Image (tube, rainbow, N blue to C red; front, side):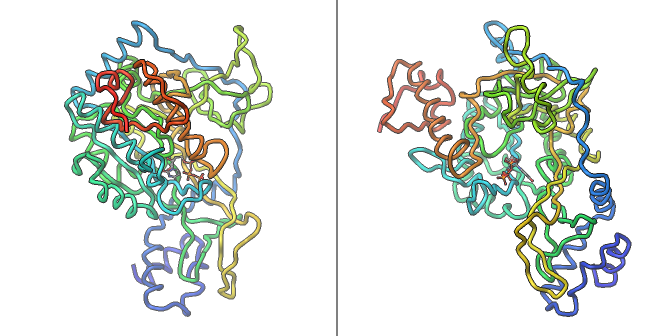
Length: 445
Ligand code: UTP
């Protein structure tokens, strides 16, 4: 793109201020600004402006009904596991990781997936995810292709982390990295914000950016070529997740579901998790901020919370459903944030109060479009302990404690008592569950 083309595009979108400092820019900055402008899409900019003008009006959730949530036990569990194992043996399952977040609460330099979480080895979060995939692909004799979404900012470091660690034992050709999109930040009146005289402030477009990125990168086509049917979706910050869990995959396929969600019981009525609700024939994820006090505290006949189950973002998608959704526009969510900017004189300003908007898409916004959905309960302590904050709850310390508690439970099942003072860590390839540990025996040291 040359200057005249950039100017005409910006004029069309009412964003000429982006070139305000052009005369003072050097050759390199001019080139990179033109490259950034070339990525701006007039249709998307118009959507952002419209979203700002309309404001965030939360949809009415008062008529929401709690969905039916299955809890698999006995024969039902056995049947689901058998169905999931058949899918894995047929090579019809992929793993899809969203790892493009900025991890601002954790405050770790670098991709969150590189964060050292192994209680003994300091192995990174990526290690535990990749090794579970490897363990299951060894067990079922078929690769589970691993699709990893990054942002523009953490792509190189993510790829390097996998390369430097020999892809954690996976075949490089079974790991597919792709980048999510970026949206420019805007002021209240819809003007794109510059954070340097020759640079537009951009931020990742949210985990919902996944759909467009899957299509654009060729990942969806790759899944199709490989004969993938079920896509296990998970987040980078939860090393307890049972990636490609046969019971969940099996439940998803036997229910002929397009979008399945694992849910766990809230620990307190106001827990900050999304709650899936049914509205007539469709489902929608209701954010905790949209729920009334009455909804949060409502009791069912058995005395438990009526809206008991929240979503920790562990899903299985039908690949064909992802394909169908990938070309549609997703709703935009606005986040009012402190965005560094350049004032009219070209001076850099770090605001102390929020001054601009970031735009994000959320993956669960496709839930209402699913013709069939399924909900499966699981025990939080076994599968969900995210690393979100630097300290306190949902921190590396709480997560390491939860990882070790889970491994200690496996050891107890094998008849071995592990003293709380002894650190524990199990490579998923050595044992991916308690039964595998019993088979493998214990190697202490
Ligand atoms: P979070 O909502 O926890 O955001 O992401 P975050 O960016 O990791 O952390 P904070 O809020 O800045 O502290 C949940 C999951 O969605 C992914 C993250 O990598 C994480 O796996 N994500 C989030 C993306 O892939 N892209 C995004 O734009 C946002």
